[in-house]
Length: 385
Image 1 (tube, one colour):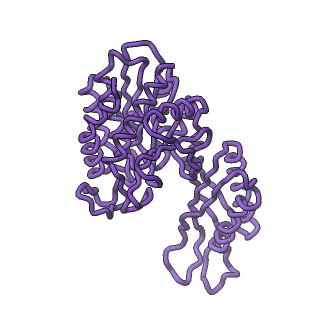
Image 2 (cartoon, rainbow, N blue to C red):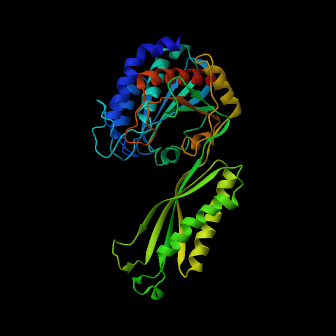
Image 3 (cartoon, one colour):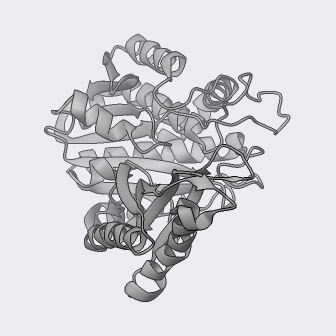
């Protein structure tokens, strides 16, 4: 099987499917149309598809004709909740939703890898489990799929996936051993004070003052309590306070925050310190605080052996494989890689605007064929054992 020629023959379809998904984005756990199109495609290839795993996720197994390992191929499929400003002919037709992170491309790539493998099924070594995952943007889809299907990773020997990466041009490929993406935790700090008239602050316990102290104090956890050789980020991203009045001190406020780090032990330590700092600071100012942790995932950690095997395979396709700096962005492929070894690699798709920007787009005619060839080649290599 010549993967490059197979991909070349599918390039027009790769681009068309990606642009269709781009025009019809669906945000986390609402990917009904997207998953329906993918499921129909896989069923037409002869695969048995399990639908509605983790609400809108899909799982499909393809069994090769020869003995080998089982490889899970993962692609995320959700969009982001804001409106597009690209002006492209295939721009989002849905107000308040757009594919601004390349997941439309990821879905198309994995679908066409399945097409190639189904065509040559009898000659393949090993088995392939295709996982189309919802809700990556809220880092909840992988855990939802694992909860719905506890045996999702049973018998799987390796995990492989990719992310299109607008920080680099088409032709650039990157993979690094170890931590590649940071852990991603969301948390809220609920601060309780005592409201009243703004002209009589001495009769109140002002939660806005407590929250202001915490916005600054939380930064010391990184600057003064974390070894600078081990990066971490604590950011306060939203403050919910009051109802717009100019003369009312509210009873309570909420800080919505994120924590990022590359080390699981450090992650646990910082979570504990955040709770202690918030509660004690609030008490010191006469109020109280409660920390509530929401969605969170561990770091994305690439296995040494599989990363080295990927690099060796990729060097047969491209002249160089780069070692990218780790990113503080999170990705819940980490849930799979924390349980089964594998690799999550990057493919340049550069089109000028960064991820999560309303003018984000990819050079799909350039990056999709290369990414498909890399993903298919890596999966075949890992399946050989």
